[in-house]
Amino acid sequence: MKPENYAKLSPTAKKLYDNHKFDFEIVTSGEHAGMLHVIGWTKSMPRPDAAALQEIKAILLAEKAEHDAEEAAKRAEAERIGRERAERRAAIPGVKLIEKAREEWDKWHDDTVRAIDNGDGIRPAEPKVNIEALKEQYPRAAALLKAESYSRSTNYAKASAGSKARERIIDGEDYEKAIADMEQEWTDYCHKHMWD
Image (cartoon, rainbow, N blue to C red; front, side, top):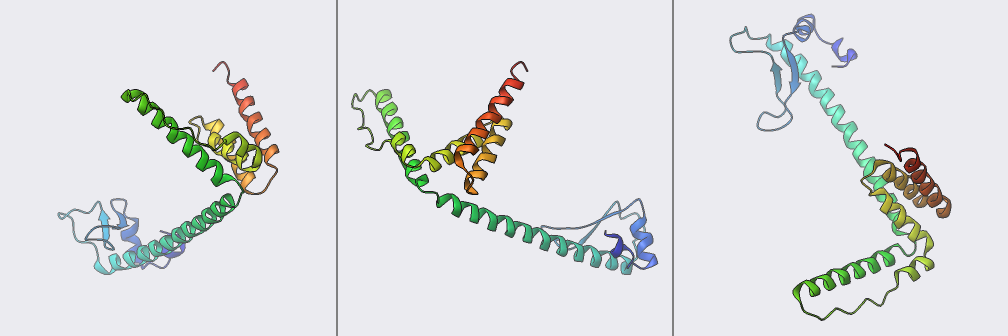
């Protein structure tokens, strides 16, 4: 309970709230949601003062509502930022083309492996799209996808370097510098931890 809210309690409610035997919480789910749960109270104990319990419950409910509103605002802001970043990412020319080309080549590879495993002997036709040509045509998109690849690494240092580069590219910074910094950060980390 916040100190300013604690100060609003009556002396009886303060005495009850300060009792080290009890903890108070608002039930947040199930059929008893919104009710006050007095942790530590058993049926063999005298029943706490009902008015004091109502005071404590009212303040805890108000604090919970305030906390929930703050969390909802944080979530809404995070979603807004996420949408903006996704829109800026999608606005980078060539990202969708390179991703689609990779999907075509991945599908071709899977189909080829399946054909070999099944003993069909007939390989599917290779996709006509040239990923390297697309990367040359859209270097910013290629840099972004490389940074995203790093950011998905299971190594935290590599993933961190990739995430920083991805954000810089999405924010419109020089993609060549962002990739160079990313690769240098990863190289420095590898050299530093070579003998770990």
